[in-house]
Length: 269
Image 1 (cartoon, one colour):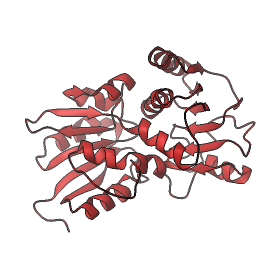
Image 2 (tube, helix red, strand yellow; image 1 turned 180 degrees about the vertical axis):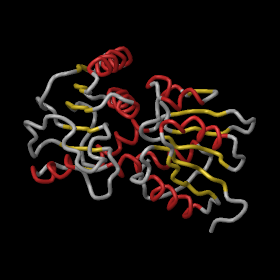
Image 3 (spheres, helix red, strand yellow; image 1 turned 30 degrees about the horizontal axis):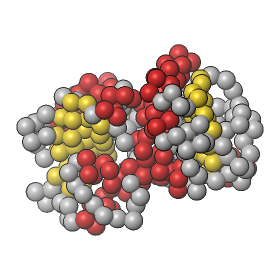
Image 4 (spheres, helix red, strand yellow; image 1 turned 120 degrees about the vertical axis):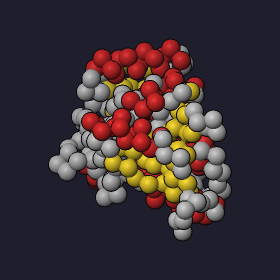
């Protein structure tokens, strides 16, 4: 029930119609009795700065969730950046403080780790192939290394970006063997797509899937309810697989705690 006292959270992206966060988070908010609603907010690139300025000046907007492609750009809007977001160089959540300042943090990495665990796999000791070195990919790479991945191989259409991320992760987690570039899946036991490939109609696979076999667990963070070409291939090959909703569910309660909205639910956070 929305009334004049309802507090608004907005999830900002382009596109935003595929976002699963409103489904997951609004259910948690309702169950916990919070008079708060998460609303999808579609901002085109040329309008992003103006849209964010308007939202951040709206007094009953207490927090923002930032999704593709704005996670890195949104960092500049925060007055304070928490360590996880600073390490990654991107935020996916902004919270208004009582004094009007905004704090930014990043939860994608932990959400992804929980998605892998939901497939019955452990990140610790795993050999992982990560496609995508952007805002989400950066958060995921750091979290995988932090949680004990033995090997992490990163590829991106921008080879320099993949190499820079690999160097950053190695610096913070020397116990993880991190490489960039290369094709195929090698000895990977977990494959993660952290790119938007698969979101648009007509998209193909995000990378060379030679060697995809039934023992590889596949996580595609693209939040399309009807799936992606990668998930369709994983299903056909008999791979354990999960889509973008799993990463959302994995971080939902933590996001709400960050916003000062504690919940108790069956959703793992």
